[in-house]
Image: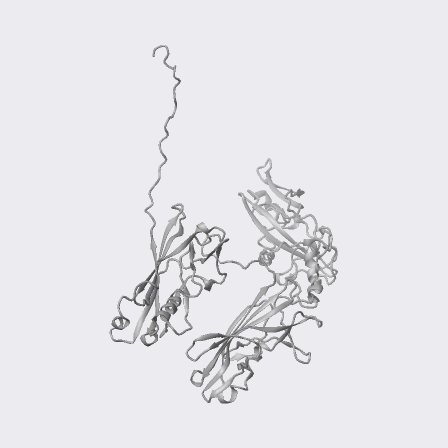
Length: 615
C-alpha cells in the first residue's frame, strides 16, 4: 500500500469526525478502518485507511489494487430504502495483515518497517520494528490485531515473526452491532417541512422515547385542530356581516410612520410608537386612525374554530389630555361622543394618542375578555406629525400569582429600586408594577409643579439623586390647596408607608419592613406653609459575614422643608420658585473587628471531703 493513500484518508476521516465502518452496495465495496499502530519506542499513532475493490465480495486473500486519492468516494454510498432497525457488523474486506502504515515508499523496502511486503532479505538487517501492532477500530468489541516482532538467529541476523489474533474490548461502550450499513457516517438529514415534520418526528424520537404511544399524549394534528389559540397565532376578528378578519395593531415599519396592517399575535406582548402625517382640515374627522371607534368597535373570536364565541372590546377608561399636557379621566356612561372634532383650522380635538389593550385568556387558549384604555387629546398643527402609542398585554384567567420583582437576595443590589409597600392587618401589600414603588420627580425642562403630567423615577438603592420642578407664584394664591397638591406631587401617587429592609423581604413578615419616619404636619403654624423641598435620608448597613456582606436598610426619614417667610421674599422679586426633591443614602456600618474565640476555662468543683482527713 502506498504512503499517499494513508495520508489522504487520514485527513478525510479527521475532517468527517466520524468512525467509519463497512459500507456495501451492489456495485462497490468500501471498507474503512481506524488503525492503531505502536511505534518503537513506546509511541502510538492512529491512522485511517480505506481500501476499495470493484467486486461485490472479494476474497480476503486477493491482493487489493492500489488507487489514487482522487478515486476514493468522499461519502459512503447511502441506500435509498430504509434499513432494518438492527443488524450485524459486516465482515471487513481488507485483512489487517495487509495494512502497513509505515510503508512510505512504493516498491521500495522501508527500513525497520516490518509489515512492508517489499522487504524480504532486508529484514535480516533490521534492528527493530517501527510499527509493532496494526489493529482495527478500537471502538469495536472484537477486532483483528496484527503483531510484528524480531528475533535474533544464531548467525546474529534478525528474523521476522508476525501473527494475526482476535482481541476483545471490554469497554461497556464498545460497538457490538450496527443498524446502518454506512456505519456512523450518516448523510445530511432531510430538512423538516410542513409535509414531513410528523414522519421525521416519529422517526428520530421513537428510539429515544420508545415506540409505544403514551396514553393521554396529544398529537401535533390534535393541537392544530384545537379550538383555542396557540402562541404566535394571529387573532381573528368578526365583521358586522360575519366575515372573518385579522386583529391589527399599528406599528412602525421601515420608517417611523404607522403601518396599520401589522397583525397582533396571541400571547406576544407588544409596545409600539409611530407617527402619522395628517392634514388637520382634511383628516381630523375623516381619517379612521384618529377616531376612538376604530380601536374599540372591534369583536374578536374567542378561538380559531368557526363556531367560537364573539368577544367585544370593552372600554375600561378614557383619559382626556389638554394642550398643555394635563390629563383628566372622563366618566363613561355610554352615550358620550368622543369622535374627533375640528375646533379651528389648526386644532383637532378627541384625537387618539394612546391605546392599551389588556386581553384575558383561559388555559385552553380562549380569549375571555378584551379591555381597552385610551388617551384622547388635542392636536395642534404646529405639533405635527402626530405621534401615537399602542400596547397590548395578556393576562391568564385564574392564573397563578404574578411574579414579584425583588431587588436582591437577600441584600439590596446597587442600582435596583427600593421595595416599598403599605401596611395592612395581614402584613404588607406592594404593587407588582416596578413603577409603583417609592419614586422621585424626574427632572425635565420647564416642568411645572402644578401642571402635569409629571415624570417620575424610582429611588434606586445606593444612588443619590436630586430633581425638582418650578412653581409659579401666581398659581399659589390659594395657599392651603397649593400646599396639599404640591406635597402630593413631591411624594408621588400611592406614597408608601414602609420600605423593605432587604431586597427580598417577605410580605407576611412586617418586622422585616422599615417604616418611613415623617414629622411634617401641614396644619402647624399661623400662616400657610408650602413645601419647598422633600428629602429622603436612607441609612443602610452591611449585614452578615465579612466574606459576603448584604446591604440592609435600617431606617428611612422624610425631611420636608417649608417656607418661613413670604414667597415673594424667597424669590427675590422673581415670579418662579424652584421646588426640589432629593434622596441620599447614608452608610452606618460599624467598622468590622476581628473576632477571637475565648480561651477555654476549667469549671470543675472538688468534692467537699477531697482533703479529708487533712482538712
